[in-house]
Length: 222
Length: 295
Image (cartoon, rainbow over all chains, first blue to last red; front, top):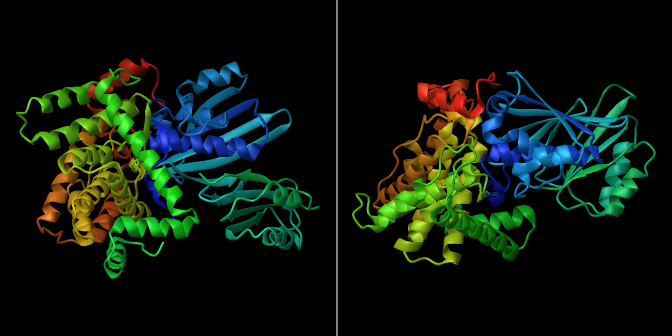
């Protein structure tokens, strides 16, 4: 699968500067984290690696990541004020830097919490605003957000994948990419499904109603 | 997409007797299922944002957030109007308009990444210049954006468009190649000439490192956008004159990728080497962030 899919992956995004990878891409990763978490976070712990760690202040990466967690899009003129807006809305933000030469140079780990709930994602910004999510709650994944994507934590047992894909089939949703991973046999598992068409709320509700499915989060194509 | 490199793109365009931008639009329709009209409309909106950023930098007093840069676009534009430029008025204006967009970007203004924000000045600089020199209107210039997108699509998927991944050659280099190809098609050149222009232009920035002072997208990024616009026009003129890149454009892209992979991390958007590590670069960094420990 190509990392860049069509014209607007190259000409675009329309965005607040100064960097498509370190500002727009960072905002997209932050927003994906917020979408997958599903609720308003009380605290965001953000760890920056590589070039992100070295240049985040000059590129506004810190500001953009928080803007994304606040659900701002890449062209939102409030981006420059995101840290201030987070403070006012009661979102506590902690920044850390770390080294890991195995990661892509523009990598960030975002940990979100709200009460008892917590969520973690590892993502990288590969250039021109395109992003990849490499881990979701320690599950290795490869989510590019080029397509509408469903992220479905579920119990590892037979028939779950078939049940989910049967629902997608009934709603005429074509799967462009799919991956399934698990912590161990019969343990927690995670299904990631990208589709050509946007799944409707009804389709998502049907998947959510399946017994082995814990939740369904969706990411809109960027 | 039915093409994965520039040679396949040209083969399609020649077989179907269409410009490359037409092939790109059709492939985009097939890939996404979106209608042709909606794609053209979205690209036109992006064109308008680009032109607004060009205009903003030429009419408003732009200062970057750091206070380090701004105002050069206006300087060059006014100079161009005095009629005694060495490059000629159109090319000097292309420089001014490229600087303008990049200055707006550094001020956290609204821009279109083409293909990145760090290199967002080059395509608008070239398109605005062609608007003047060739008398093209908006709908034609939007087609040039699809030519640029087609070349950028190939570069991004076969090499890199990220300074952290491949240095400045991946950003300003890619943008220059895209703009050069667009200029050729808009000037009525063939698809083959368009990719030759891209190859010629990209060759001239191979090895260019990403060394932003204080990690800002300002020095040397803004000035490099100004130069990139002229380089794109020069590449287009050479290709239109019949000059060919002896190393085929697809192999130039591959060379760019391989050079990027072997570039030390200090020169890939980490602000650790190059201009960022000069005495003045370090002094600027200290002035902006104070004495606090660098991340």
